[in-house]
Image (cartoon, rainbow over all chains, first blue to last red; front, top):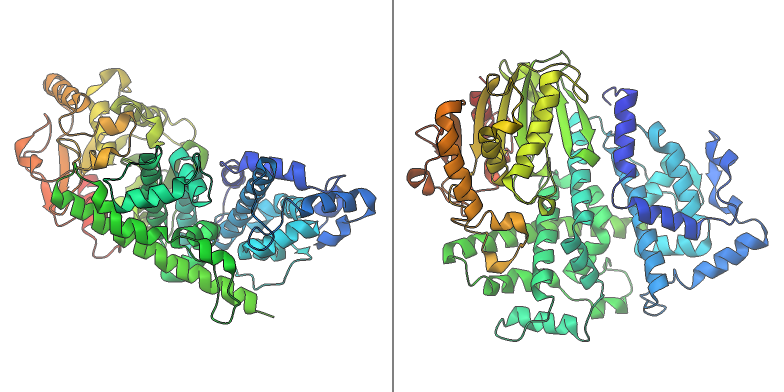
Length: 340
Length: 248
């Protein structure tokens, strides 16, 4: 790893901590942390720290019980519709994004592990000391969080292989580009509106069905947010592909992991290997990638035909790239599940 | 192989790839519509990091990639001000720069090229030494007559998208402004790189629409709008050759 000045390390750490995930992470820690907060002495110690060491006393057990319902699996234990539960889960997801970025930053040699060790331990213990939070992690699959835990010696999660920090200098620049992309991705209200739409947040009954029908036949009446959703989806695709284009194929999985959830939503399938039991939640998922690849050209009537053809080809190429990353992420998740 | 370090300021949307010695030359890269300060340029930043010090021309240059959030930009002037701010700091050698820079090159893509054009003619934004120290200007895929994709189904709203529509008022004003001030300001000739496969801004306008101060003949390659600023390798890269040419 190239030697970095202390100022540069501080600036990079700040860049990792102050993206759009900052406020959700703070809220997640407020809602999910043990009643007395993580044990500061244990966090600062150079020795490993065990998550279960924080489940001490009736107050902690009561807090853990309170978290059980809001953090349940929506695949197997019922849909989530309560706004407070939704907010808590969104915040936890963003806090886990922060953890994934720490891991990827260290893997890429963008920042030394020592620079984020304390913050990462605080984050992991604060979020994952309770059984419901660890079940959430398991249900929604965050392999990079497991790697980070191992790297900063937080025990109590499944052991995984943790890659050595890269010795290729270009990987740190690549990570910087990826971080710029992630910032742009989560700051753009249109992309966020689209991802929430894929996650079934609608403003009128039957909005998703109407949108799909309108995409297939522009002569039908459009739902009010149709253009906003098309725009958001195109930006979603463009932003992801611009980031993934930088990568070598063997990096697709690790850089795709922070987007694993949205890739599953976009391609309409959960990560399941050949030997896995069928997850009934997959049945209700929709393949948005196929819809856009096939029907977007119907929605470009004001554009010259050759320009529209170019836009359609570009879009399909981008979606193909996203598909390759999706497959790589899926493979790593399925392999991680199968590991002893 | 010698490799450079880099300063990364995510919150401020810039990355500086600097040499180990105190270079006095700074090339500033400005991205286009959407994208960000790094991904727009594909692997160019990492290729410069890896290879610049081995190149007799590039070794003397530092490379600053600056960016902006497209939805936050309303006019070309907003982009021009961002460039101007960095140029002021670089001319004075104030942080984040470790030393004064004495030569500058401006390189832009798509909408970023209009921000550069705007800066050139907006004298109020100039550091007193800016034009004298301007080494070269290289514009990739500049929207000479706006973008044919700006009308993409009425999508991608926002003020700056309007400023990319063909024959839009802001672009016409920039053209007239440039026409008016170039004879007295006489900045370095601007080199244009256009792509035969560029369906976003086209290339045929290069023959029809001239901005004052542009080189009479533009460079035409078999690029599309995105690939023209995304080198896939170093040794055989036309983009590298163009950049080296601009910085020689």
